[in-house]
Image 1 (cartoon, rainbow, N blue to C red):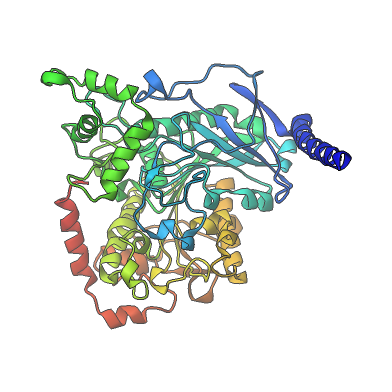
Image 2 (cartoon, rainbow, N blue to C red; image 1 turned 90 degrees about the vertical axis):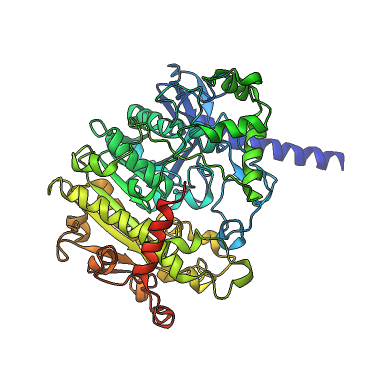
Length: 568
């Protein structure tokens, strides 16, 4: 028995050592950058894709660096690190409020949360302030090619949640399939750590999450060639808040965007209402409730308040804000981006009309029924779902009309700046347990990333779903490889001209049993111009629309009136 146990331990040790030696001994899994040498791994499920799961791009924003812009890493190219585990996500709260996102219907869409569940009502267990890392997926084919295009992806999550370690957003299968592009995903600071709006901070220090993104993009520009990528062929991609942020970059860094193109997935600068808190009241409210109120009111510039807040454990701050929100307490707290007219601007219409926007090609996409997954989850009415007229009104005001505005302003820059548009309208058994969801916000993520199989516990992936996914990937990749001419030459996809209903192609994916179809742009954008009624169910469920007989025009007007009178 003793010999058997020793033999077993020996086999286990050899297996572990063998696994480590495979990583360290393989030169093609080790890459030297300007800030360190990193050894990645190959997942046996994806044998032609190298993964570098945790590469820092800035110094940890901890202690005295909390609430400061990201600081560059020292140049230590020979210092060796293993990048075989995903990094912790940036500090964020895991809500206990029931939603679509923390039910099994969307398994894999949230950050890895250690041993906690997805509705713990606590700060994420696997989060840390030392979180400014990126992950790189690069094909083994890149070993012989140093000019592959790069997709630089920024997670969504309302500037409150998100990160690298989200299974829906692992591009392993896409890179494995294409062997012709690289994907980089990043963490960036969120909520009060990314957008503090604190009195004690100097001008230009408030939109820290956006500055983190820029620091990561600069690191990729300087180092992606070591992974087989071309620094001149970076497409800046984001989804939801990540897409809005990518568009912020297009305006803020229009003279030096670094990126050769943008892919804005369900979000543009016109989709978001930045914080309106000139008195810095949200930050000070939190400070008071965690014991950081300055005595005797002698802290006019906020220095003492900020110094005290820097000394607190981040979990204490996150838990207070998150649990306060879960209780539905008032006044509501919000830590969104802050207009400073440096990084985030007050008037994007004026900047667009002045041409102060990066003159590079763009894909702008939406889902057909964006807001069905963003309204309160109808726990007591799961069969019928939320009130569709309100959902449709918000589909238009959040998704359709901001996208139209972004298209129009880029069209005005001339034919040299093509705008490609598509709508995801596919509904599939494993993503649409409830019919009222339609093609909801973020349902296109597992389609474009190719991670739909994570939902097979709900229902099996269909062949049609795979075909839609691969077609969407191929259209995006044609753009990434050649943003000016690739979609036209490779896919026959012409850029859209919003002022001309016949000017270019509007693609719809997954509707009516068709992988791809071209539709009149006015069928979607016409709702913003009073030309047509918007149909959030272009998959044969429009009978809902006929039955309910809602007045979308009235609902949109009410929604805009509500937004104008509501502090976001």
